[in-house]
Length: 213
Image (cartoon, rainbow, N blue to C red; front, side, top):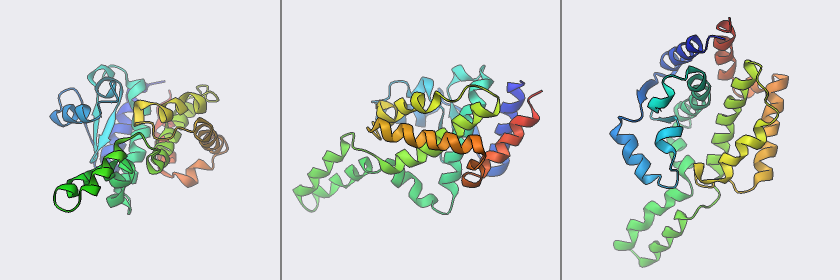
């Protein structure tokens, strides 16, 4: 398994298909500011590859781990696709909803103090749209493992932890719902129907298949 070639192939696909570029996360001032905002996720700068506005930010410690990078790229490129689709203007607002409603707190100073109640949206309330977007992303993660023959049956339970903890601000606290949804996606990966739901996965699968030797 030539993971370096797979990484290069997926990276090239990211650039040619979506115009996505790859940068080091550690040296990005924007990422450092974002890590301060995302104070609840202490591993944001070291353990998470992040995609925003078509730029893939990779922590430096992953640079020598192509087998990690290309799998995460599969996940993140699904987000890139979603952010560039016809619904792209809604991607970030929906992803951040309902916590993004706290932005209306500024109206308290020009309209009514009742707008201070929007501060309640800072609470870790369930974030349905973020949940749906990340289900698509983690479907890519499970597919990547399946393509190279790694065990996958444990993944719905393993990945569900990210949905119910601080990694994504407790976006979906109902573990059973998360596991069942991920299991349904894994079943689609196994029977091949996922490629109708997320066609770009078949394109990335071809890259992996062509570099297995």
